[in-house]
Image (cartoon, rainbow, N blue to C red; front, top):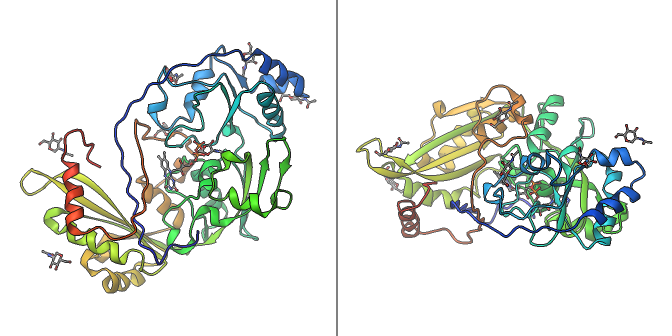
Amino acid sequence: MKTPSNSSLLFILLLVIFSCSWAVSSHEHDDFLQCLSLQSNNHSSISNIVYTPKNSSYLSILNFSIQNLRFESVTTPKPLVIITPVHESQIQPVIYCAKENGMQIRVRSGGHDYEGLSYTSQVPFVIIDLVNLREINVDVEKKTAWIQAGARLGELYYRIAEKSRTLGFPGGVCPTVGAGGHISGGGYGTLIRKYGLAADHVIDARIIDVNGRILDRISMGEDLFWAIRGGGAASFGVILAWKLELVDVPEKVTVFTIAKTLEQNATNIVHRWQYVAHKLDEDLAVRVFISRVNSSQNGKRTIQASFQSLFLGGVDRLLPLMQQSFPELGLQREDCTEMSWIESALYIYGLPVGSLEVLLNRTQANVRHFKAKVDYVQKPISKNGLEGIWKRFFQRGSRGS
Ligand SMILES: Cc1cc2nc3c(=O)[nH]c(=O)nc-3n(C[C@H](O)[C@H](O)[C@H](O)COP(=O)(O)OP(=O)(O)OC[C@H]3O[C@@H](n4cnc5c(N)ncnc54)[C@H](O)[C@@H]3O)c2cc1C
Ligand SMILES: *[C@@H]1O[C@H](CO)[C@@H](O)[C@H](O)[C@H]1NC(C)=O
Ligand SMILES: *[C@@H]1O[C@H](CO)[C@@H](O)[C@H](O)[C@H]1NC(C)=O
Ligand SMILES: *[C@@H]1O[C@H](CO)[C@@H](O)[C@H](O)[C@H]1NC(C)=O
Ligand SMILES: *[C@@H]1O[C@H](CO)[C@@H](O)[C@H](O)[C@H]1NC(C)=O
Ligand SMILES: *[C@@H]1O[C@H](CO)[C@@H](O)[C@H](O)[C@H]1NC(C)=O
Ligand SMILES: *[C@@H]1O[C@H](CO)[C@@H](O)[C@H](O)[C@H]1NC(C)=O
């Protein structure tokens, strides 16, 4: 998929508090561990990375990358064994021994799967947790980077900015999302209009297949290389690392957020946004969040549409562009802030624009129970349709966003 500049794309995220319980599975895993020990040429190294429920740190290792509390309950099916490789060669014995013993493998990078598929299963399973495979090597000259699957997006953005203020990468907004799941499933963020998906910028990859062979782009062939860039890699093997092509960003970008309530014409402006957002200059991305808020006028509840934007350029070029394409929003110079691209990564995620080190923090601040769905709207939603959606925000049990 390339830049979706000529189709109307609207992402609707429905978050619903939801709690789910499953039966616990418990099984023999001694044969698996014995196999692992026989298959591994370095016994002391393997014992440092193998966790069973008997190890006191088993639960904290398991919980560390769980990003949806629906799947952190005592009744969520748990792995018989967790392996946290520190070297690629420690993965092959796991694949071999899991097959020998009829156990399924779940591969986890950042753990952001909406349905917990990287760390839950209804059948006996082991987790290959790539949390320790997180090296990132940025080559500024060639504008490329090798990134191991367990690295997080925030770490990637930080490592790029450390070496260059004019290179970036078109990935997701949430800094704790893992490279393994994100890039193999597509991956989009605020650079999508100009540069498309994260997966569009993969130029090589290392993967271990079901037979334990380590393959790169040439040895895996173009069919498999195509499949792992959007098809979700878990069906095909264990991604070890991606080689990415980085993209150019200007030294100075501009961000703004403008909120409009129903009283401030939100319905009309959101309606209009559907017709202009995908036709704006490709340096300009404007997304919108809908939430329920208290009205400042009468203390009653209302709907607020928050338009948030990243522009790859300075405010002087942005203002006339907005005036020409989306005057309904009424953007003023004082709504805008110029900053570096890496600072915009903080801003867009809602972090204070200050120390960049927070991008290296692998703990997500907002872990909660949620149900998420992503949909693609093919035709603009009518004003009536939007008003119908607003009503849902006032229904009992609605979280309001
Ligand atoms: C809070 C939050 C914010 C998000 N923000 C964005 C966003 O801005 N943009 C966006 O596009 N998406 C976003 N997502 C969705 C996210 O990109 C996907 O859930 C992605 O699959 C997560 O990757 P992960 O490695 O963190 O997840 P994981 O749960 O580790 O993996 C997800 C899937 O990929 C498989 N997998 C993981 N690593 C490997 C590997 N190395 N080899 C083979 N298979 C593997 C897993 O088995 C699982 O099936 C967000 C999700 C959350 C929870
Ligand atoms: C085995 O692994 C341990 C711990 O990771 C390491 O210190 C040691 O050097 C390794 N030995 C060999 C022979 O590779
Ligand atoms: C988990 O416990 C086993 C058995 O006591 C031990 O051999 C192994 O080293 C422990 N794993 C870790 C990572 O400490
Ligand atoms: C991990 O989650 C479990 C629920 O599965 C919970 O009971 C436990 O307290 C958590 N443990 C740690 C160390 O976080
Ligand atoms: C609200 O938006 C509509 C359509 O864009 C426009 O015609 C109207 O003048 C706006 N009203 C106000 C009060 O801004
Ligand atoms: C909105 O109003 C309700 C009731 O008047 C109040 O309980 C709530 O704290 C307010 N919310 C915010 C964000 O101000
Ligand atoms: C990382 O982020 C989490 C969640 O916001 C926070 O609790 C923790 O203190 C942060 N760690 C560091 C080292 O800043």
